[in-house]
Image (cartoon, rainbow, N blue to C red):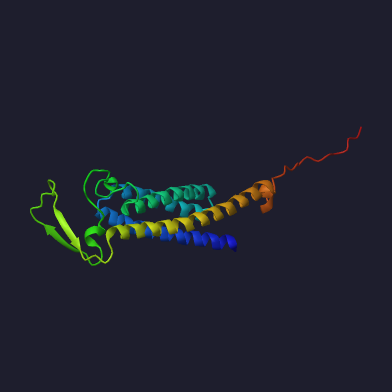
Length: 205
């Protein structure tokens, strides 16, 4: 019963991770954030691997899924530090999220709740093929939206990591008991026995 409840809980958390990752992937595509797009894609593949490992009783897949979650937590912690400009990180200088290929920012910068976007005409700050805008009236600035999104990913990843370790431990214990306590004998397996049709007859001389 505990094994079933653990598996079901892990599958539920994996499904929540998939929904959250797909939602984030959509907004990163809209904002041309290439580094998060790549990371989200790898995360979606890892979550699908975790679901498959849980359903098919594959402990190795769950171990790989748990190892990826450690990297995923680190990546999201970096995103929080980046958007909150912790230490030497700066959004105005570092364009890590776009691999330094464009000046695009988060989609939430112009489309956040309550944001009013006003184009600035004839600005000397505008580069070629770019325009300068003024964003005012936001109920929540986009760095905090991105930080909250990453915090949600960390929350789900931590719970997923705990349950992945628990379920994989249960699977490994079952595999060990199968290998060392009877093997196929625990399922009533019996090797076929050879039968002889020869009959001994007395020899009269």
